[in-house]
Length: 444
Image 1 (tube, rainbow, N blue to C red):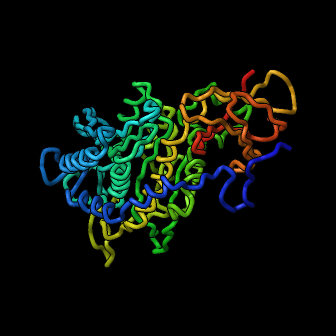
Image 2: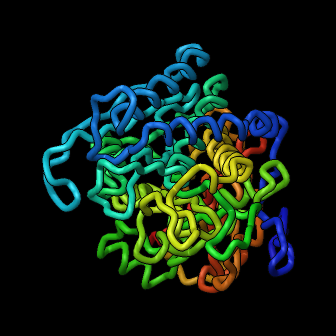
Image 3: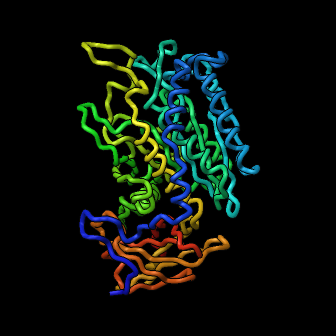
């Protein structure tokens, strides 16, 4: 048995073998996340009355256009503290008529880009959607406060942009408030397609959608848990990729599942105060979010959502019925909880942006029938790259359980059968920060 650097805690324990304790830099960043600012953002977005995608775009006080302009102003104010590293802009297009879009409609994302100082071509995206709705998805006139769904997610994005603007990430981070989600994920689909058309190297994307409350519809609370939805079989999988997966396994080892494991590694700890509950699904039943267009374009992407939803406070007309208050109002939000969700996002994004990128071209050599396993990969270009680690686990284990440091090499042979366990490769830099794991394909 090869010597290992770390082994997993007993079943149900934490942390996993691949966990990365938060360093001083990350702890300082997370301490700056302010629940009061998050609350102010949610209440300001609610103050626009409705943010329905089909609502007015030229009223300075009401409707989605007023919200758009305020968001741009906020992000530009954060960019002023960045020394030129952050820019904020509108990303617009006209959506042609279709389901939930009765006439040509301008859809506008509000985007801030914090350019990386070392590998700016490597990109990580965090989003929330700023449009809102009531019971009738086509009702663009009634008040649709959208406090939890999804001013809460937008507040996470804005607070992270504010805190990170004054810092220098190695890779690029994009902070996005997208529109058109309730009408069909239109804004995020346009953004994802723009990245794909440009050949952008998006190595991770998170959407925060309904992250405002830990209280379920029966009144029970789980204030220290956040769900992270992460698909297994990729939405973008080709027939050839499906055939390969069927032959060697890997249903639980998509790039998105590795991204979810990474989030647990860096954000399930005392610095965030949160338990990250990874859900092995793309999204909830009959629901969808802004990560899906990224998944469909072969980008790793996952969705943060509160632990148990209260459906009386989302997608509802504001009203009192039989003494019960309905509607997505800020009084049903817990801003300390949302601040902890922001810390989870912050820990994941900042570590991703400071660590090396996910290893490329990871392969298992299958030329010879042997009971050992040879892995190969391409060396990264980061100037602070220190080397690599092989990780492995039993095929029935959900987390990586063993870590083997192998140094600054691009091939390694381990005395374990590739037929019996799953392997992965991750990069390490001189500060000890680790990348997400790359799951190797077979190479004959």
